[in-house]
Amino acid sequence: MTTEALERKPLRRLRSPIWSLRMAWELEKAAFRGQLEYRLNFVIMTFLGIAYQGSGFAFIWVVLRQFHTLDGWTFHDLAFLYSLRLLSHATWVVPFNLLSDIDMTLREGMFDQFLVRPLNPLLQVITHRFRMNVIGDVITAFALFVLAANMADVSFTVVHVVYLVLAVIGGALAEGAIILACASLSFRLLETWALRFLIDNVYLMFGSYPLRIFGAGISWSFTWLVPIAFVAYIPSSVLLKHASGLHVSPIIAWGAPAVGFIWFIASYQVWRWQLKHYQSSGH
Amino acid sequence: MTATTLPPGSSRALHRNLPAYAEIVRNRLKVSIAYRQNSLFLLAIVVVQIFILKKVWSALYATQSSVNGVDRHALLVYLTIANIQGWVLQDPTVSRYMYERVRQGLVAFDLVRPSGFIPQMFAQLMGSTLSSMMFVLPALPIIYFAGTLGAPASWSAAGGYAISLVCGYVITMMLTLIIGLIAFWTTEIFGLTMLYRLVSQFFAGALVPLSFFPGGLRILAESLPFQSTVYVPVAIYVGRLSGLEMARAIIVQLAWIAGLSFAAWAMWRRALFRVVVQGG
Image (cartoon, rainbow over all chains, first blue to last red; front, side, top):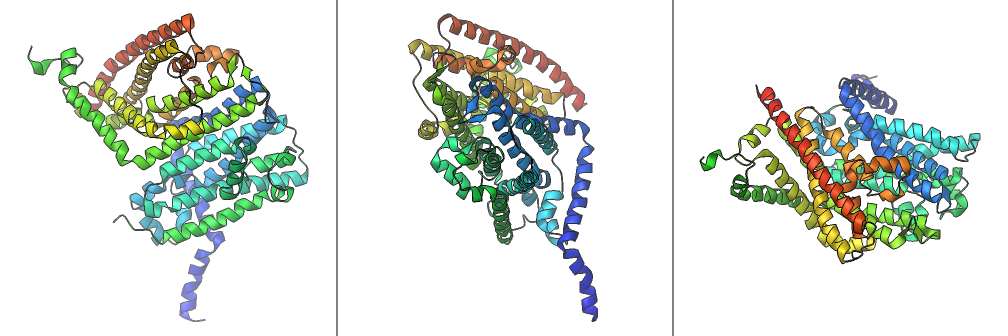
């Protein structure tokens, strides 16, 4: 073994994905502990997260008390759909919430540090701090999901549970893929927060209702051009036995979780490609 | 009394400082033009929301043409106008601007200016309202297709709407001012402004008209000032509130203006002392 090979060995260990993820986990924990120091802010932000995600649910509740069904979906069905989308959303924002700060990270030159450290820059972007309002998202998501899963007529066989877990992860990636691709544009455009806010809202608003009510054109677009249907509408249709009303075949409906994975892999390539266009702000 | 010692609130001072306020309004407009990309995306969210509401409510009305005495067309006009109006009149960034001034100590400069602090903030609000209007007017054709636009129910509805809208705007200004004044006491206001936006949007009836609220929630909504900002004017517009009911609703609005003005005034007097403490 040459000396060169000996010196390279620890570096290779450094770059292994498992090591990277462990490192990212440690950084995330440190960021979380850091934020816990601001107790009052933690309480306010958590409460805000609950109010933000709960207000959409309040709308469905108030309206369905009056009308009983929305395009054949009962309040219980809609609650399940809404909470499944929220669960996917929470699964995405807990690790990746700091992508919403990317404009600032780039503008203030913090990204220069990330490039010289031996860890994937994306992992550093998402772990350098922690935004506490996502805890509110998680609390609301779990509370509503437990409530809705009890109310709605969902069968929880092993197959269904496996499908549900994969669908939540796939849904998280289906939302994340678009946000990540948009955040990648910040390397060139410098400011994309309003666009990401719009995307976030489009996912929230279109993703929380049976997509069918918006018409065939929108259903098609938000299935094949932007993967909103795969976040919660298609999986909850399968689990609630509404699949016959879907605009896609049962094979695609059952394969829904895979779509999110494919989108995310493609989106990560966009990120790596746009990364090359990074210009330091001059620190 | 010389001109320089006029108290900021007096009418002569107000008149003399008009050019200064006009300048604040103009600056606000310039800022929103400079960041037009962001303003357009934020407007797009409102348009998407109007579209979603139209589709969801149309699906709900699929089997009925009238629910609770509200027919489908009137409801869709209500929702469209309520959401545009809510977006034009309300700007949470002004509360946040006040908070930033206080936090960074810049409020000291605002206070020593001959134009009063409160009128300065009102000028900020008017500037943001004008800039929102500037974006909404060219977007009206898109909003027409995304939602449903229609004329007021009658001439008296149009007149009532104009009066009620002005009252609603003053109430919105007072609420924004009160939220902003809280910055003098707390060190953090971001969560509060977001929360205010969510709560006020829901209780103002921008998503569901108050007449659809179930019993207890409706009593709560009617005892809060938010309904006077959106629900009352737009319900008058579509003819839901007319005659005596309309007059009563406008009187309630005037009462809110009086109550909130007093609350803002009382807070402002105390806030001034807080500034002295912080500066000392």
